[in-house]
Image (cartoon, rainbow, N blue to C red; front, side, top):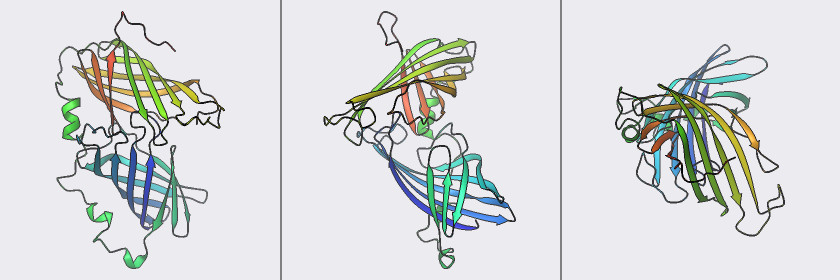
Length: 307
C-alpha cells in the first residue's frame, strides 16, 4: 500500500439540487505502511460546473474549484484492507463540502492499481512509478501541505448565508410545513421535476420531523425508458430528520429513510446528508455538501401535494 497513488474522475450528478452538474476530481494519495498499519492523507482538486448556467452561492459563478485534504488511517489483514478518513477535512478555496460524514473505504490492490469502494462509488487509482515519486512540479501533492490559507471551517461565502444573523436569543420558529421545488434539464436532455415537503416539529431548540422527496423524470425524445416501458417514472422517499436551532441558525441531520414508492427505475441508492443554515421570515436556507436549497413556508390557504 505504501507509495503515491493518483487518479482522475469525471461524472454528471443525477440527483438532488445539483442534478445535471459536472463533477471533476483529481486525487493524489500518499500512504505509508508499517506492518499491517496504514497512515497518510489524500488531496482532491474538485471542480464543479453548473449544468444549467446558474451560479453557485459560494463562488457566485457557474463553476468553482477547490482543494480538499483528508487524513486517513487503515489496516491490512489477510482478508481485507480498510481505510477511514480521520478528523475534519481541510480546504483551500471559496467552496467546500459542509456537514460531511468521514468516509470509510474497502481497498483492493492488484499490482500498481488500487481500487477503493465506499457506500456510493468505486475509485481507481494508479501507483506513481518510484522514479517519479519525488517530482512535485505539476503534482497535486505539491499543494498538499496546509498553510494559513487552508481552512477547516465553513468558507466565508457560506458563513454569510449560514451565520448572517446568528444569535443566542429566542430560537426562530420553524414548526410547520415547508416546501422546496425544482425543475431542470438533465445531461441526457430529459426533464427532472423535484419536490420536497418538510414537516418539522419544534420543541424549544430541538427540531425533529421528516420530509417527503418526490422525483419525476420525463423522457423528452419520445423514447420509453427500458426500466418501465413508459415515458416517465417517479420515485418517492421519506427521510427522517433531527436537529436543533439556536437563534436563527439551524442544523439538521438525516437519520434514516423509507422508500415509499420505488419501482423498476429506482436504483435503490440513497445517502444521508447533514445540513446547516438559517431561518428567516418565511424561508429556511440550507447548505449541504456543495449544494444549497431554500425551503419556503407553505401558505395555509393554498393546497399542497400530499404523498
